[in-house]
Image 1 (cartoon, chains in turn green, blue):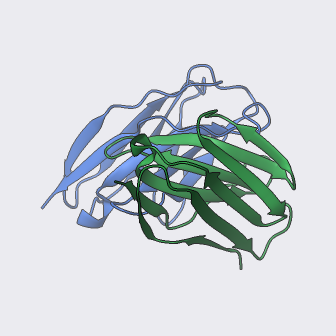
Image 2 (tube, rainbow over the protein chains, first blue to last red):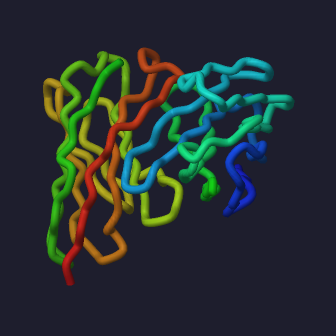
Length: 112
Length: 111
C-alpha cells in the first residue's frame, strides 16, 4: 500500500533562518507531488507541484523553492524565512488523471 | 480554472443528515468533482468523487446535478467526528495537475 511521510511534525525557526521540509512517498511510481500551505483558519494554498523528477511548477514566486531530486521525494526550501512563512505545510501526492489526492500529516511551522 | 463556490459554514445536529452544496458551473465535461475533508490539525482526506452519476461509499453519498453545475455531499447521519472543513474541487484532464482548493465549508455538528 502507498504511504506518505512528511517531517518534521512541528518546527520553530527564527526569522532569517533556512528551511528544509522533506516529503517521501512509498508504494507507487511517478506520482504527482504537491506542497500546500495553510494559514490559520484559512483554506489550502498551492505552493508547488511536480509531475516528474526535476519538473517543478511554482504558484508562489516568493522566498520558497521546491525540488524533486528523486521520483518519490519532494523538498520545500527557503534560504531566509519570513514571519509570513508561518503556517501548516502539507505534502500530497496522486497519480495521473482524476485519482484522489493523499495528504501527509503536515508540518506546523512557526517563524519567530 | 474551474472554480467552485461553497458556503463558509454550516451547522447540523448529531444523527441528522447533512447536505453540503458545491457550485461548479464552469467544470469541464471530463473533469470529476472530488470531495475532501480536513479534521482539525490534520491533512485533508479523500471522501468521494463522481462524474455524472450519484455515488455512494462508506463515508458519504455524492449527488451530482444533471447539468453538472453543482453537487451535494450527503452525510446520512452526522456524528461529532464529522465536524471538519469540507472541500470540493474539480479534477481530471482539464484541471490537469494544478489542483487548487477554495476555502471550503466548516461543518459544525452539535450534540
